[in-house]
Image (cartoon, rainbow, N blue to C red; front, side):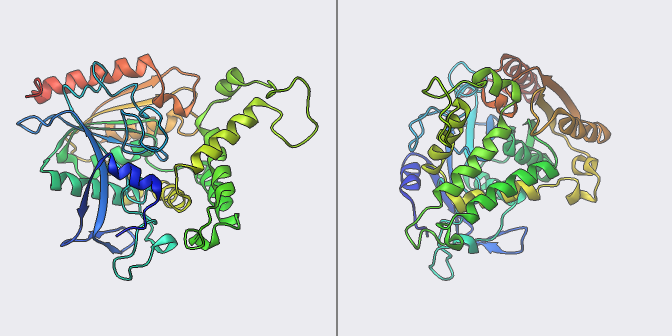
Length: 388
C-alpha cells in the first residue's frame, strides 16, 4: 500500500492505525474516490462505558499524532504536552484523547508517499488534492471504525482550528463542544501568498524532479528548508524575534562580510529548515498547505458563514492572541459574529501575548485557565463524571 520512509516506519511502529475505505471509498472534494486508505492515530486515556469522554485533538500543519509523548522520529517531547498529560487541562485520567494524522501527511496516514492501489505505483504528485473537509471525513470514518458515536470536545489550533470548524459545521450532532484556537473560517490572501512562496521554493529545487524525487533517490532539501524558514517567520511576532535575537551575532564579535549566518536569527532559521527536512516530506507539504488555502467555510454555505452553524447544538469557545498576525483576532471575531447570528452558545477570549501565532503551542496560563473553565462547564452540562 505504501512506499514507506524510515520516518513513517518508526511512526507507525509507535502508534495505532486503521485501513479504511475498502468497501466504501472516501469521496474527496476533488471528485476522486480514495480507497483503501490508512489512517494513523494515537490515543491517551480510556474511553468510558458511556463513550461520552472522547476528545479529538486536530493537529496543525507540521505537527502530527504524537501530542503528548516523545516523538519516535525527532526524539522531542510531544508538541502539546503543555496541555495534555496527567494533572494537565486535558488529563488522560478523565478524557479519552485521540489525535489523528491528517490525510495527505507523511507520518502514517495515506498521502503522496502512498502507492496508487489501481497501479501499484507511488502516487507522488498524482495523489488527489485533498481539503480540510476530506481530512475531517477521514477522521469521522475512523471514529465510526472505533465505535465512537460522538465527541465531548474537538480542539485544535491553526490548521487544527480549521478542522474544528469543519467538524462543527459538518457533524454538529457529533460535536458536543468545540475549541477553535488561532484560526479563521478561510485562509487570507496573505497566507495563501506565503504558502505559494514555500511551494515554489520546493518546486524550484532541481532535486524535486517534478514530484518524483524518491524515484530518483533524491530529496529537495534546500527548497523544503526555505519553505519551512519562510513559514516559521509567520509563526512568530516581531516582539518575540527581537526579544530572542535582536541583532546579536552568531559565534562572532564582528561582521563576517560574507553570506554566512552572521546573525543569530539567520542561524536559527537555517536550523529550523534543516531539521524540518529530516522529519517532513516535501510533497506532503505541498498538499497540506494547499488544503489550508482551499478552506472557505462560508463559501461552502452560500457565502454566508452563519449558515455553516445554523441550528448547531455545539458549545463553542474561541481563542486568539494579540500578537498573532498570521491569524489575527479580527478573523476569530468574524467566526464569533457568525455564531452569534446563528444563535449558537459561544464564548471568546483574546489572550494577551507577545509570542505570535505559536503562542497556542506554548505555556500560556490565560489560555489554560480559559480552556479549563470551559471544559469544566461543558462537562457539567454533559454529565461527564470520572472515567470508569
